[in-house]
Length: 253
Image (tube, rainbow, N blue to C red):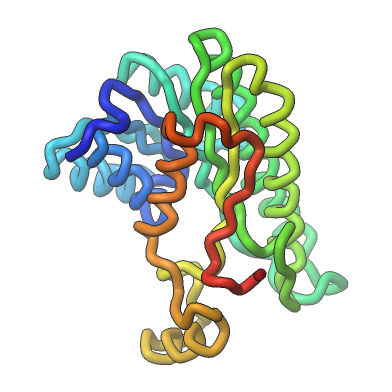
């Protein structure tokens, strides 16, 4: 374990699996106390167990960031459990409303926007409120290369939601850097998680598709995304404000 985030308290939403779990584990390895948040208790408990088994400190907090009261409570519970809040990573998100724009199910669209866009807004709103009143801190939002950087057929709704996350992040970064709150985005492409797989696709088929579709020839590793998040949250990135770091193996180059 290293000490880049020693004595820091970090809140990670969507921390029960995939990229969020990797981010939580990475912060803990570098000395942070971590609050792992999400809607389902079981996966959060598994992330906490992994952190504690490695000698770190973590707590699991259930809540839905698309609900403003939950988003505010997650901040309060992080502070109460860990003694403060220094860094927040907003990774909670869903994919859905797939298909051509004219055929998008309206209920699926509303859910997508509620979680990905409104959830990011509510999370930042309450995190910033605490951070600016307590000496500042850093926020990193997890967006996607689909949106501001790339579009593909059949994923227009998701791309729109993530483009909104990117724009909202940059606006918040400008609004609140004077408050001592530094805000940035990472935008992953295909990452080696279940979300990047297609229905019925085997691991071999997925690897072959990635070799053909991604210039670097593979999907990203969750640890690579986590490393970028930790950089943006660290003092080393003190001059980085409102950036959108694309991590997609060259897909949107």
